[in-house]
Amino acid sequence: MDFDFSFFLLMATVVTGVIWGAYILLLKFTHTESVPENEPLIVEYARSFFPIVLIVLVLRSFLVEPFRIPSGSMMPTLLIGDFILVNKFTYGIRLPVINTKVIDMNQPERGDVVVFRYPKEPAVDYIKRIIGLPGDKIAYYNKNLYVNGSPVQRVSLGMYHGVGQGQSMTGAEHFEENLQGVEHSILIHNGAPSVEGVYVVPEGHFFVMGDNRDNSNDSRYWGTVPEENLVGKAFFIWMSWDWQNKGIGFDRIGTVLK
Image (tube, rainbow, N blue to C red):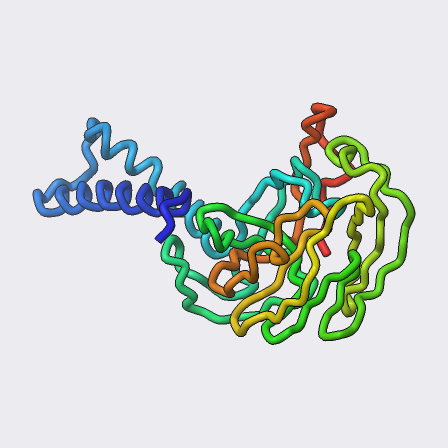
């Protein structure tokens, strides 16, 4: 069980619901016809907050959840300061807090941008792109990616010119990568060191990488992501705040992720 925001949201829902419900039952057992005008302050707060926290709990646990991008590991797809929405039911319905799947739905696909609980510290959420599915053999050599023995095709778009939060990666080489049908942008910094190796994805796990290949703490370093750690699929940028230029990135709002 993770004692994160979901836990405290669930507790708030339970506590306010119990207080309000207990007060209604008390009025019923004492044969009070209507709610007194001067009800206890704690009951008034519980009655006001219970519907709100319940709606937030349901939306956040089963439908969509907002996240803010804190690092540049997914540049140029996502920039620091992007606010994204994550589909919580794409891969199945899970109970909040205990994260037990109760309804199975779609399976994660290669190329999906996913939010997951970092295996080494489950209270921390990471966002990466799924590269390898269960049973896949992934290789990374000389900054080239291979899936099941086949090189992943990519086309150079020239030098990356970052603006705002993307300025730090100006000078990196910008590629359009075709991950077996899923086309997306990646960055390669030719002067940066790179970890290399061959990885076989275990059953029930996924191999993930950041689009900013030389600035991403991903499966190349700490291993694969268990299926139960998946939070959902990122699909939309609903807000972008450029911390360096202190303004809203209107050009990024409404971007559908791929």
